[in-house]
Image (cartoon, rainbow, N blue to C red; front, side, top):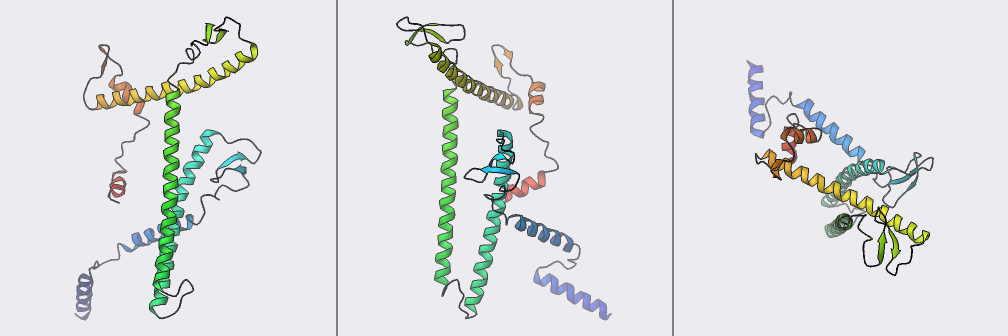
Length: 276
């Protein structure tokens, strides 16, 4: 009877405090969450600008990304893309770690000040608030610089695509020249004089560069076309180009089969991300 009374009192106290009465089932989950959070914070200790400064690489750029491996060979674009992705993930973890340290610092200094002990970080709360404001301003400045860099990068990519509109076989068919070969390279200038070998070499180099830009532009247009046709087909509208269907449903499904997962298993995680 005494045991039953004690259990009832304990349950009433737990319900009153807003906690679960049993609580035992949820403890392992809480421990796992705390452990995961600690592991995340430990990973965030490493500065993203220093994470690749190891013996595996011999040269780095201003952002800390490697440009050459330990043997002196330049890093390829695909490798650089992967490393940049890792650095961005580490940057998020490092920011979370710094925020955690800042919060702890403010809390402990507040405890010292509220207990009447002078902290070495400042004589009063105004100093703390001023330092916090400075940190926030510094963070805002860095974010603004990052946004400006991203905007400049997007603008450069757009300009590159615009340059790629010109067909390399037509780029030299202007009033400056009077005759051209089969590839569109000029053979005579507007006065009828033949083009020298050195001039032809320079023009060929320009044409090759334009050819790369034009291929990238055509690929971009093709990707856009496939995407828009896929949108039309998925919405039930037949996209007709010249009286016939450009891409069938099965073809579009095949093109996008490796890019989009079903997402059934990951739905709760996606919902949590959207909510946050």
